[in-house]
Length: 510
Image (cartoon, rainbow, N blue to C red):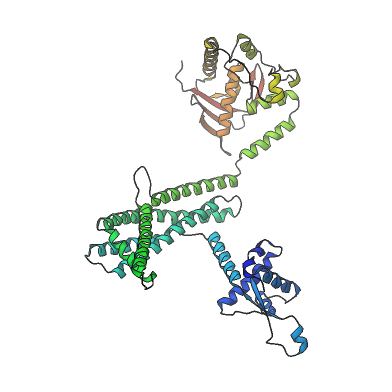
């Protein structure tokens, strides 16, 4: 028999073949619920609906070794000397094994618990507080009624708080799913939102009533009621004896502290305090509203996936295919600049030479090996960091650099305004009728055209959109049977389906 002080009743959870160990122990636990204490190996096999083989015998022996079971010699069926010498045992759960089963059952119940939003509990708490308020008005309230009411309030409140916490946790798990039955989730979402909406309304109404009743009970002396309940509990907890009075007083103080703590928790749950502290009921309402928004967003995302609209991953896969299908290196450069728009970084230290280098950027077709180099400190390249030792540099006068940057920004703004003016149309115009565009206006036109095409949904032929900065409005309509439109520019010829385009400058510039 295993020494209970060295028992390891949880060792079977991490052992190989743990499923069989759990089935065997559940069989013993169910037998104990039927007031059956001892089980033979064939009884365990019948419970598990399997053969009583060597594997089951070894599992029972290991559970005895770990201290979950106790094995006693089975002498009740001995009819001969051979039977006496043969290994026959009766098995039963030990105290450690029983405690381990209760702990595992409690853990599995807590983890698998979905919880509920109990509107009925809110009504019960309100009714019990109303009865408690009536008792508080009496000069000599009945301690039994007070104690039973407080116990009932504490029980209902504890159930309400625990179930609300479990429900919100299970709701987050439901929202965070990635795959599954989409139609079933959407149908479940509709019922769940209605359920949460009803609870939010009940919580707002009942919560206000409970907060009012709490203030009412406190104004009539709630501490007197809590002391009556504590005195009644202390009378049962303390045995009679020479020091019974002193022990009863200590027990009453401890019970009163417990009841005061419960009352404070009840008040914090329904009544907001000072310094911006919100009640738990209000926080629960906010969490429920947030959960509804998340549910709606999740359903919207699922509908987008089902409708076939592209997402970011699909865009990147398409871009990768374009890179793979590019005919030459010049096309790769153009695609890179169009997709990512990455150019050299501009620093505060600007010189006329830097400005000249900006104006003479490398051509898109230039190989990277022949592009102008970026010069860095040898120490930075060798160590990955650069720290200049010695006396710090004097503060530099950067007014000229800021002036150069301001002039450059003004020039860019003027060029952009001129490009907008050249792109502005007097009315609906065919793409093929657009005049020859300079490079600046053509780049702006490509951006406008891209925004319009991106805003057009599948199956639509017309679209109206604004640029990201809200400075221009674009209307684009497909011309059925219009053929191909060609727009000639200094950078090349743009070819695509014929459209009617109308570009409006919203900045009010002449």
